[in-house]
Length: 404
Image (tube, rainbow, N blue to C red):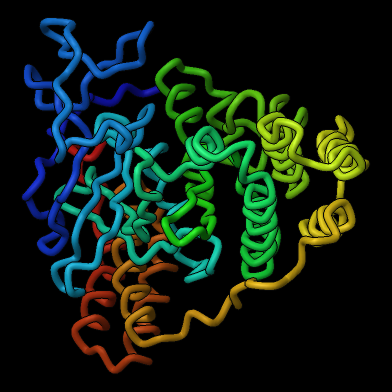
């Protein structure tokens, strides 16, 4: 495997601009000795100064919940959209400097962008491709947590609310099935691969939103790339299993076999079991037994014995809890606004540049062509000219060496 030089890019500070229009409000903590994402203490999990090994001081504009594993999230204000709060998602640049990993990030970003706005999925607004290409971001809907909670993930919510809000927890799981059903309806065959409480965000409005469609599991691919585990990397570059989080992975995913949407159903069964473990006797005995049976059915070793799709899961959940219904379900709608299509055009251009720079020329040409078509439909001459210029550059010379 060819070696790739590690390139460290400092973590952006609060107050700085990313891409000329996204002002950083909160950033992950920075190691004062390196300017990079700090190390974590193995025993406590707290961020520490790599030089002194002491815990970093907590600052209001440096949020430890914006960094996890190899990922980075910036809480920003979009200065061109009235200061709307957004999240800029990326991975540490020293990992995205590797072409195969960056290519995977771009492919997953394209899928998330293609979904468009859905009420129970975190919306991806656009992709940013900055500088020499090692700064690649997904601009996402910001899900503000409930007041008093440090973050919005379901695990935090359960610890704060269970068991007194048992019924609310089950309604949130129903929203999870709605969100996955909407996503699969828009992109048939879509697999999340890493459903878990940390990837289910509960906003201050009580709405559950699914995040990290495909991106969270990229950490497994990065670790495999760094460790030289070619088989694991190939599993992530194909439709094979792999990725995911231990404890939530279906057997076929853990064994790197072929997976489909039933791997996500397995993860739902694990999450449902966790909710029931938190309910503390709040569920009527008959209801609890029916829900445990559903959780066990979702976690069958043989995927053929699990519910086939999210509609079957919904029906089983409602059969176990007749008080659950469709009341309050938000419509999926259609992502056809002009602003949305313009963001899609600029994202196609950004993603095309990324694929060009990792040597995936046919994919880059496809994206630039789609961007050109969309720009023409929008009457955006500048956008069309940019796409045409980039399409021409696909056929020029080798990839710049500094990108390898």
